[in-house]
Amino acid sequence: MNINISDKIRELLVKANYTEERLAKDLGLEKNKFKELLDTNSISAEMLFRIVKIINTSILYFYPTDKDIFTDIVEKWRYSEKESPYTSIPLVEDIYPENLLKTLFTSQTSVMVPFNCIRYYDSILAIRIKKLNLKDSNIFRESIIVVNFSFVRIKDSELVIFYDKDKNFYIRNFYQDKLYSFNNEFKPINTKDITIFGKIVYFQMDDLILL
Image 1 (tube, one colour):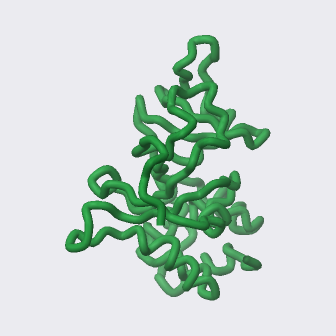
Image 2 (image 1 turned 30 degrees about the vertical axis):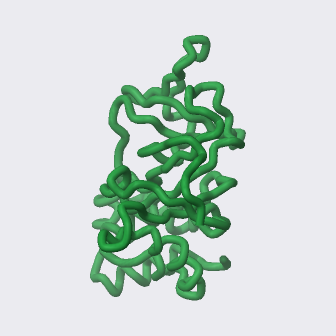
C-alpha cells in the first residue's frame, strides 16, 4: 500500500475543521512531537485507529483503493443479534510488529467467538498463538486469543501481548507499568523497553468455528 498517511491526515483535518494542535492534545501528545510524526510519516497503525475515532470517520478514508478488502476483513465482525450469538472476526497466523494494517490484510480466514465476550470492543482480531513465545504465559499453545489493538490505557492485572526490540512476541500480565510473568524465574519488564501490541480480551482452546 503505497500511500502517504501524513498527507491524508492533514487533508482530513482541513475537511473536518480540526487543527494539528487540537488533534495532538486529544492524542495526549505535544504539538511538536505530533508534527514530527507527521513530517516523518511515522504514524503507527494503532495511532491511526485512534485518530479516526477522535475525528469520527472511517479507517477506509485512508485506504480507498483497498475498500473492498478492508470492508471484508473489518466490518464483517459486526454482530447481528437476529442471526447468531456469535460474531466473525479476522484470524491471523502471523503478526507484523508496528504494522497492524499489514497484519489485518494478511488474514486468510476468520473465526467465530461469543459476542458477549467482545461486545465492548470494536477493534479486535484473533491470533493463533502456536508461533508465539509462551515461556512467560500459562496459556496453552493450542489456544486462540482475541486481542483489542485499539486502546487508550491498560489497567492493572490485564493480560497483554507485546514485542521487544528483536520483534519477539510475549504474553504477560500488566501491573503498575511493568509486565509480570507467571514464572517467577523471569523478572518484570518495564513497559518503556517494549511495545504493546494489544490487550487480550478473550481466549479459549483452538476448537472455535473457522469460516
